[in-house]
Amino acid sequence: MSAPSPGKPPASAWLASMAKRLLIAGPLLAASAYGALADDNLARAQIVATSEIPEPGYLQSAADPAFGTPFTRVTDPGPETLPRMPCGQAYCTHRYSSSQAWNADQSLLVIANGCSGLCFLDGRSYEPLFERPAPGECEWHPTDPALMLCVVANEIYAWAPQADARTTLYAPADYRNLQFGPYKGNPSKDGRRLVVRATNSAGALVAFAYDVSARLKYPDINLAELDGGNSFCTISPSGRYIFCFQELSDETNEAYVFTVDGIRLQHWSENHRPGHGDMTIDADGSDVYVGISKADPDRYHIIKRRLEDGVVTDLAPYGEGQHASIRNINRPDWVFLTYSGTYSEIAAHPHWAPFYQEVIALRIDGSGEIRRVVQTRDAKHDYWSEAHASPSPDGSQVIWSSNWGQAGGPVADYVAHLSWPGPASKKASAQR
Image 1 (tube, rainbow, N blue to C red):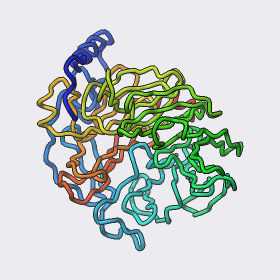
Image 2 (cartoon, rainbow, N blue to C red; image 1 turned 90 degrees about the vertical axis):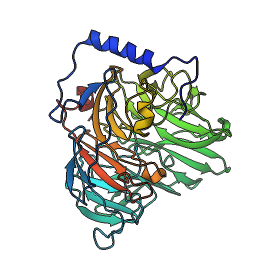
Image 3 (cartoon, rainbow, N blue to C red; image 1 turned 135 degrees about the vertical axis):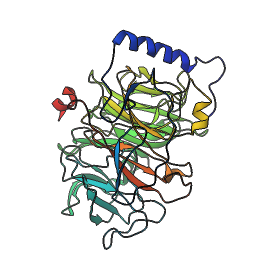
């Protein structure tokens, strides 16, 4: 990542504005039981050096020295945790930051990377329970804890992994190569709708929404009519919009927003503005995408962008933000951010966001309120060694991956445990 271009508004101006808003707003919540650093605000946050701590053993717990957050190591690359449940020597981790790791009631936790299929753990004790062959692309149903919604080449189906029971929802004869996204698809917040990418009978690559409750297919979107090649398409949390991400020949990325009926609403032609993120329903009922911008005027800021009209809200200044997740679907007013980088890099740029190898939770209302969760200790090596923090539906647990400071070393998963000063938002409770 390069320094901000000359002539661009410095992050210091953003921080000064945030400090002014903080003074007007008055004091925030008192520090949590985990220490004075746990609850904070971007306007006054400072870089915190990573303290040395021995890597916990498998299923052992520890506390983060900087923030006091308790956490547990939940996977062990290499050994078989149960008969016929092996995990790879190199990594044994959850799938991705924007993929739901826990089921709806948080009784099950799925580990996908490195397992021979999908490995299911107890969602609270993390004891291994069972393994199932990977049946295409599957994501947890957001309200039914027994189900996953899955897509394979020729069908959409509901799958109960514990019972290993499968129900076909849609099996079209005139489409092939069906994909859930691919890889970055999620169902709507109520579990009714999802988006499938497929090849139609004419050989064209298309995307369409499907209502699994009404068994209703929506019109095709011809992806060849969009700039670049398609990376993925997914449904918005409300189920009202289809979001498609396109990669151009120069490796920049643009986004398109459609209604479920295939009517184009938005074309975000700026590169990756935003990307590496996740979607949620904002306080005003709007679907928003929260992620990292890679274009001016907010390059490498954390931004929120409204799907229906493209309006952008700047949430956090220039920094080493790597991934954003709002899989805390029942506490949707916070985004969990994974920061990469090194101490020396961040210390040399005092106007950047003061985080490196750290997970923070950021309130998405623009107030700058944060919770500093845990230091990840993931030494840069490859994609599999990235932390990819992903919270549980209620935000009380956050899973992340780490090689524990050893570049090229085995990558295990860890779960941090959070307490919150009150219940999930009234809006989230009303939506459940």
